[in-house]
Image (cartoon, rainbow, N blue to C red; front, side, top):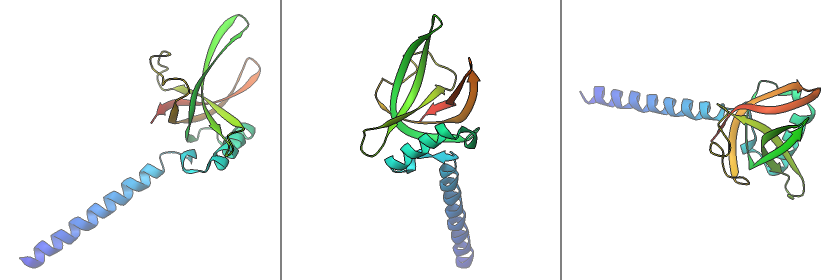
Length: 144
């Protein structure tokens, strides 16, 4: 009886350990490129590389942390609004931004964080042409 209980206890411990390890591994793999685990210098360099070599990131899931900002502009008489996650280099003298669209396209400002607040978001990297210009943005983003 004692051997059976001991065997059941050991089997339970092994099962729980394996389940925990699998959960931890899947959490790490939730993004193809996780900028939240890099130094500020590496983040800045990686975002720069994404903008220069977008073909290397097409369709990949990206997670990043930065400052939320909104840019409003007019083009051909039509008003536009873009949302971005801004990252800075180690000395905070230079900044790179990645434009994004939230999943479900919520209304602004109700569905968005307050301007200049820190955010962490995850989305799919996309590159496309619009009005003769190459655009790069993270789509279907979720703020974590």
